[in-house]
Length: 338
Image 1 (spheres, rainbow, N blue to C red):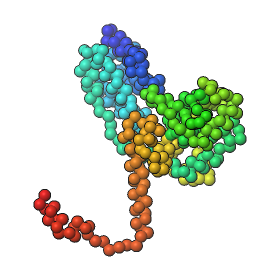
Image 2: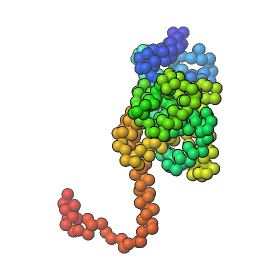
Image 3: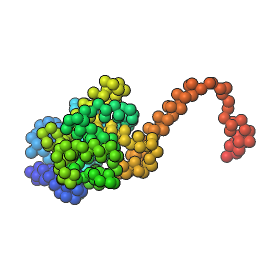
């Protein structure tokens, strides 16, 4: 009986005291951790043939975690990235359990030894400038919802903000007087400001004024047809809708799987191609590490390499010769003495 109470109490303490009170994680992160632990408990009840209230810490072994991760990939068809995210949440719980229940230290160490799975890093998809313009040109901004979508996509492209950052914006987060900017509440409760282009602020002003709202109102910036705050799923629907319409005149859009995050990659690439400093792009996007931003440089260099290769094909072929260091005997002698 004590082990059963220990598991239930430990899980409750992990969420209430550790994640929220001590670490101060965002609600979005807490929900992600909750989903991972919930799925693990559901899997354990089926394998152990117990009800969830009868599960004990002893039931959650390292082998059980490995079987659960295989279940995610095979039965739920989760990608490796999702699998690793679930494992990160499980690791966090067992790391916490080891600190409050030393008698389970060996069991926690075994679970923490379950490794993350390596996988190929996909190249981020981004849109070309003409594709972005095509999407914006197909929005009918004569209606209120059209004005909302026009302002929304312009803001998304201007700032490169994450989907949850955009839908949590309030009207008073935008500065409608010079210098124009928006205050963004990012991951890890980090706040940043991003400058806004004149076209973006004009679209936002037109939309807010048509809603008969004031620029200082602490109300949702983007709302749905029922006047409630737009959700991430609503944002995804809007993006896909306008991409589908624009694809009729811009077929290249059909080669992309466009999501709100695609606009984030697009913003980063276009800033890089415009010569903006890498550290400025990191600040613009709210990356915790510049290593994340550096990935866009590698994509841009690969694109330039392919461009150079295509140019070489149309240049007249020249007789191949050995490199200069091979033709110079002095260099060869110097290398042999090293």
